[in-house]
Image (cartoon, rainbow, N blue to C red; front, side, top):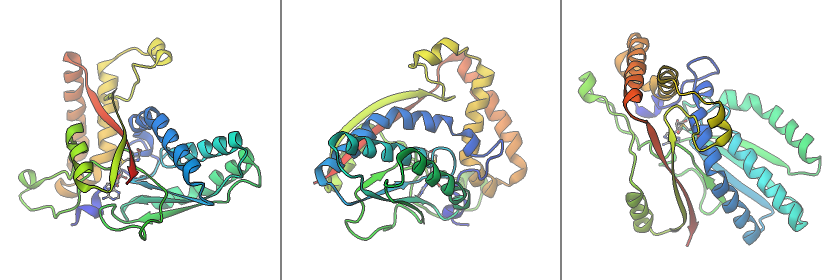
Length: 283
Ligand SMILES: C[S@@+](CC[C@H](N)C(=O)[O-])C[C@H]1O[C@@H](n2cnc3c(N)ncnc32)[C@H](O)[C@@H]1O
């Protein structure tokens, strides 16, 4: 079976779903927000497009899917308010692989539009949000049609190959975490963009934010709770691929063991994910 068909986050809103277990990714989106807001406001005031076309690559399905889009819309609304400009129209493309749970996203759109109208008034927009199934390693859009491309926690997923036989040896997660030097080199070699901003920060494996004073005050570290959160978060991401290759029956046992290993590790040292926020500008 092609990786494309099984590379999707756990569907729905249940206990093991990505929607329920994506707090860590939400924290990263919040930390990257100043760069995203700064870049989109800058782009908008430079080009003043009548219709702002935005795409989110690897949008998944859950509370984070429309979070970035509403941050972008709020930032443009605020910029227009300050500069006394009429707000543009918005065309938003939510991209993910075809196996993503687009149906769940579509069902949330009427409420999202209603909320927008309530907050910003009838004259705002219009804003249209469309699902765009397909791999971001293939061509998704006609040339030069998108003003702003956003992607969070998705570009480390590699392009697709076929999974081979012989179970463990042949199990490949299509996943790569580059160093910031490798990232800079790729941008430089590709040549279409220059690196406008690069920020690096880490977050705890369990998605708690130890930089945040409010959080620090109420936060009691418990290695079992943190191990459980981390195991649920990884399960929400990797279960479809692991179940497809090794079968459904191993899943509960595997992730219970994984939770124990993580808790054990956290009793000895901290677990951190390193994150890069990059903003690229076309040359
Ligand atoms: C960990 S989720 C991140 C979702 C969301 N951006 C967030 O921050 O919560 C990664 C998403 O990237 C998608 N993805 C991976 N490879 C992709 C590709 N080649 N084309 C489109 N989407 C891809 C996965 O299906 C998954 O929904």
